[in-house]
Image (cartoon, one colour):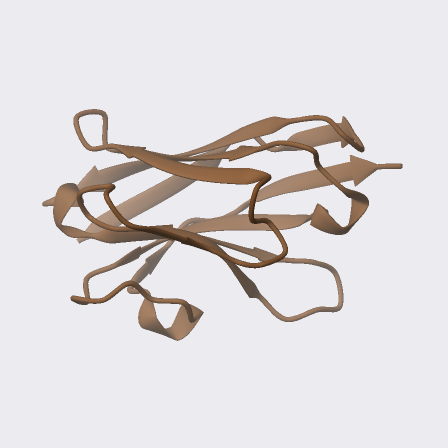
Length: 124
């Protein structure tokens, strides 16, 4: 069982940076793959990034490749999303999620636990 709480969202200008953090509590955090998803107003939830249990494998949505970096610190039970060169189209509520499956999940339905989300707004 894992509980997740996101933080670090806010309002930034286009081209700026934010670092989101997801704090996990519960058992066996290091055994879960972790992911970040986002949902903009009027749009479906979309995959952003995921990281394997050891941190050795990562995948990114094409829209954020080269700008976002996902990382985890199993000693601190946290997973972060460093977001650089932010664009107005990055505006959304960002959610972290935990996945207990053997393979990295790219769909929200593959994740078992979710945080409440944190708002990111990028102004032009």
